Image (tube, rainbow, N blue to C red):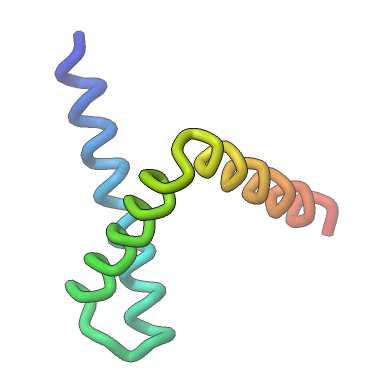
Length: 72
């Protein structure tokens, strides 16, 4: 029962990093692999430095963005 959840989380994280990498590669005109690594480093850095509070604050910002999208 643990393995399917783990695989799902790994693939979900890979999809998010791939999307962030694609966005960065278009905006900054850099290689896709480099942009995925940069995205992963940024996520790891703010999680390690801010801990769970940094992740929670990011979720709150995303919640407000979703509300704005729903209202408009």
